Image 1 (cartoon, rainbow, N blue to C red):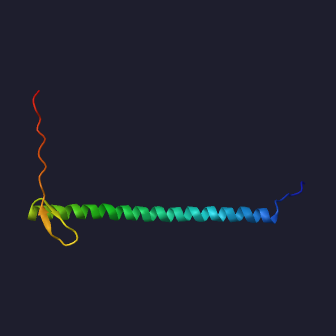
Image 2: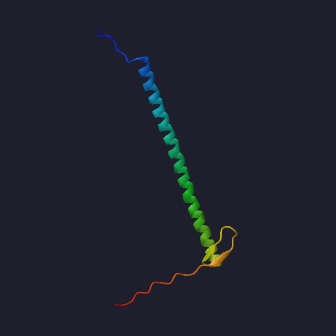
Length: 87
């Protein structure tokens, strides 16, 4: 039977420490990805809510620009429709 050969205790400790560090990084990445997914879902919902509120305000006041610092608004200028010339 052949003799069992081993790496040194320090080498084994180094490898185990590196493996633990790598595993910890994978766990952190998973947590961050989960939080990212939650944040993206919140963003989508907030965008839908904002668009609904904009629609309500447009129905009530027409097309306006709202100053978010004080709630005042001005009527939005309509952009001129591009005129196509016949050549």
